[in-house]
Length: 394
Image 1 (cartoon, rainbow, N blue to C red):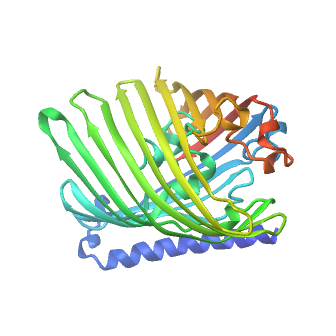
Image 2: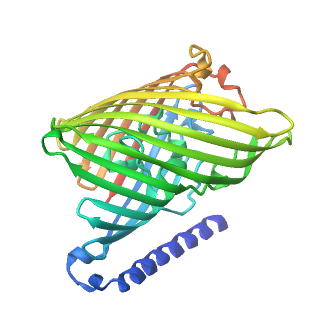
Image 3: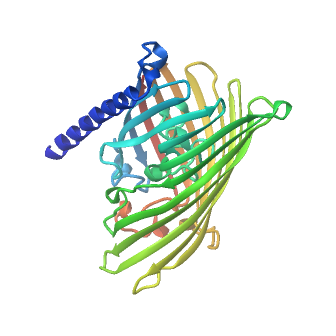
């Protein structure tokens, strides 16, 4: 109970900080004194509660095989236009995803955005990472039909690492007339990782540091209405200390290069999308036991959705994940193939209900820690996951 009270106090302190921050910035910009709605603080929020049940294997939670309600997200964001060229925003967020999150209040993203030309500008702060088609809506349940986005490229457990970066972003949009348009976004910064959310009962991580993170995304809006294609690239380096359950300590240096090629057709009520990605990792260690690893993971999915009415939208996708392309992909622990059917029901303008079923072959995405310490190679190769989620937003 005392832990809950402390977290509530922290959440309210962050809200007070948000209002203080917005008022301070506003007072420094003369245009913010305009009393019109255009310059008013805009407040939006969302809350969702989900349920997950899995067959044979635990996913996200130690109890998902018996059904778990550990699928909760709450967010509150504030945005404000300060002048014709300057704007700011911030979002508070907390969640519970199985053993991840535990309702720790955090600032999800914040930014100062200066648009020096009509289609060009710069953002500083904790800015969302433009990676693939949908990384930036990872925190917006109302913007998609699925509960879980294709996990091969948008793993839910890694949301805290992949959603936003602390640094600077340059962006631009150029109309090419008969040839469509180009959007370019470039970013440079770091990520602050909370060790509480990455530690397991088997391994302890400490002194986690990200010396650099940089990347970009180039999207081409083709002359065909609703059709766009692009590529995203990200380079990141992690450094951390690792202590195994047997007490062996290691210093780990982990540079990684991630890229994804994307194509989407979104026109009228039809949405078609596909993405293909590879993540290259080269882990080097200073340790009594050699833990050096070079791995290239391969990730892909194809998705189709159709909005039949204003209140009903089904979606189907097939997602494939290979954690290391140099291993035997036929082995259970070396692949994950996920066929998913999602149903979205817009019950009101501010209330969504979703139902989702996964048929999964492979155990590459599972955790031994969440499955009684069993090696993932011994877990059931064919299993299912079923999710329900209700989301309210304003």
